[in-house]
Length: 283
Image (tube, rainbow, N blue to C red; front, side):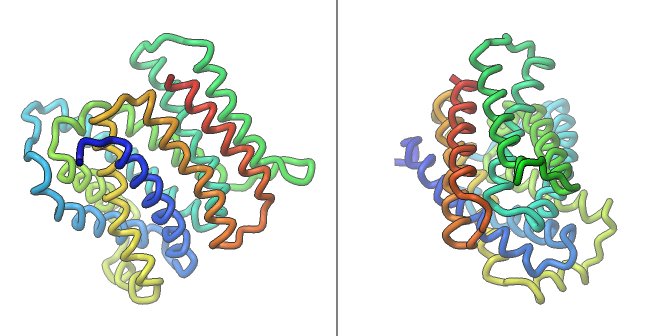
C-alpha cells in the first residue's frame, strides 16, 4: 500500500490545504513572526522524528553532501522567515498563486546550473505562471504592490535555490531524519540571526491559537514527508502538475472557510493557468 504513489498525492493535497489554512490562522494572533516561525518549524522537526522507524535509516558519508545541505538550509531559513511574514499580510489564495513563482525560479536555475535544454513548451509554461501572477497583482485597473509582495518573491527565490542545491540529497537520508534536519536547522538559524529569545517563543504559543499551532506543527513535516516519498515512487513530470492542484484547492477553501473577499473567479482562472504552466514545464 505504501508504494501506491497516487495515495500520497491525494493525501498531500488534502493535508497541505489544511496546513496552509491553519498557518494563516496562526498568524492572525502573531506578535512576532520570527518567533512564531521558530516555534512551528522546530516543533515540526521534532514531531516528524516519530516516523523515523518507518523508513530504513541511512545517512550519507561524503562531506560534500553536508556542505550543500547546510547552504540549502540557509536559503530555506530565509524562505521560512519570509513565508510567515507574507502569509500574515496576504490572503491565502493570493499567496498560493504567487508561491508558484518558485517553479519559474527552479526552471531558470536548472538551465543556468544544470545546463538543462531550453524547450519552447517549458518557456511557455513559465510565461503562463508569470501571467497568472500578473493577474493577481492587477486590481482596479492598476497594479497593486507593497513590500509583502517583495517578501513573497524573496521567499520563493530562496526556496528555489535551496531546492536546487538539495536535488538528490533527500534520497541519501532516512526521510524523516532529513526533514527534521532541514526544519530544525532553519529554526535554529532564524533563532540565532533574528536574536529571538525563548520567552518570545513561549509567548507566541501562550497567546496564540494553540489548536492551529499544533496542527501546523504536525502537518509541516508530514506534508514534506508525503511529497518526498511520492517523488521517490513516481516521475516528477507526472507529480509536479498534480501537486500544483493545491493552488486551486487553496483558493476555493480560503474563499469558503476564511471568507476572503477578493474576486474568486480571477483567482480560479489564475490557478488553472498555473496548473497548465507547471504541466508544460515538467512534461
